Length: 153
Image 1 (cartoon, helix red, strand yellow):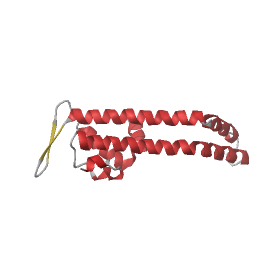
Image 2: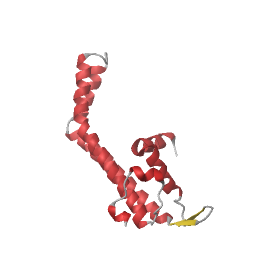
Image 3: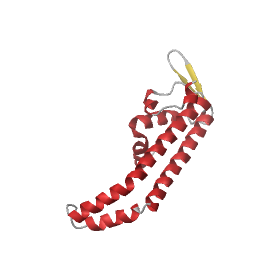
Image 4: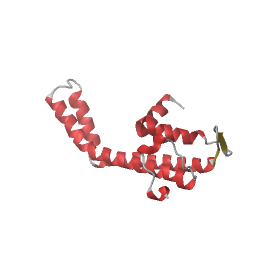
């Protein structure tokens, strides 16, 4: 994995979330993987996990596209360009500070929507891993993202 790709994953999932997703992704071998522990053998369905991770990537892509669409529709792209021009010579000038504040106010709802969409994608992925792939002992790092009520049964 490239450094840029791993940095992007950390930015999206955070360190704890990416650890759990990485743990699930490690088992993406073409045949069922078997992990031996001191007391129990755990068998997982790699194809099922691959399907959940593919769905997660598609969901995240949709979330990113919704963020871009939101920022374009709300005019945030133009405000960002205006802020860059206003701040080119002096980042402490009042015109720069005002332009950056206008951009921040514009992009805030789009970022909130992106965060909600990412959380929903994570929940869907964990629910898929739990319900469909029968991974009931997900890593503790995944506790930041809740598995849906149907998975708790």
